[in-house]
Length: 218
Image (tube, rainbow, N blue to C red; front, side):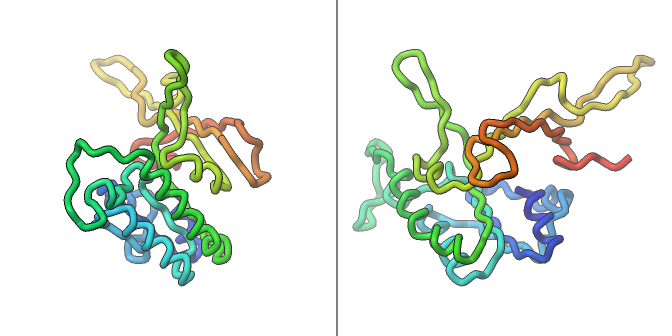
């Protein structure tokens, strides 16, 4: 996401980043090429509804060209914590598929504005493991089926083999040995409505700890 923002800014695009996980590192973003002075950074949102309203407003007013929401998993609907009257709920009370229902409504509302304004909208999420029967498990997206339905491009990123990770040689105690400086990132295209690459194809990219997908300068 940081690489996307940096490249978009180089092309004169205005970018927004919604940090719901409270993990945005300004130093790391700068190292990846992000111009913080030109970035619309939204922090301190208390509920999923607040974050969703910000996205809808940005898209409706065509205020930006790129929106990143980090992450779906951190979206917390008000109904999880309080009743309609504002009374605080106990942690014992269950709310079945609350986020999935909220995401379905949100994407139905925001999609027309996103498409009309030609905004790149990136949703970051974690993979969920769904159980089928007693033994079979299946990976799925956080936020329900609506996320997959509305997605134009779905990318699944994971670490690859350690042997494929980028490395350098160092000398220690008179011996020359390998030192890992990153990991092999396997990017799998799970769904696509664009013609750049077929579904289920995999791309291997070296990810460097200090510079991301860009090779470090000597």
